[in-house]
Image (cartoon, rainbow, N blue to C red; front, side):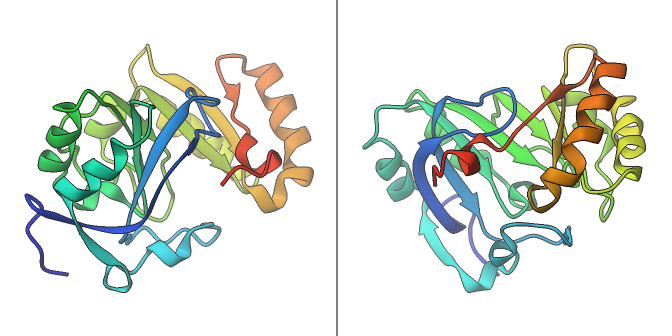
Length: 204
């Protein structure tokens, strides 16, 4: 998809909601889900976001005006894989209007733009960059099978000392994996549990 990231961005969906995962759980937030991803997680719950061409190109200034209609001043940029794109203009336009900007990324691409909180959720399918892990404020590792605990520990070695550490079961296997996750965290208390509270509460 050819476009000018200083004027337009491919968006699957955007909406005002409650953040359901990680450090900012419970906070009102405007989600901007960018379209396009080449990481390809087999258990991804938004596979519809993978193909950028299937979604609309939105004018960034008009998108910011939509975000301004709501009282919250926290924006979460997610995907797809949002760092596939240069986020400089999008984040600048949001910052100029007083927004805090959080991003959720696999870490597979360099950081662009002005980001206040970086949540890295690394995937085995495309390794995160060491530079992105080092800058992470939050490391959120998804547990899909037992080997994912080792994968989480490998990535923990590359984050900074202030990074918040979270383990989260893949939703479809939560009943099977949650007891293992609880036991693991009791043995490794540097980690915290992240739960997809928005799914339990049926919040879009």
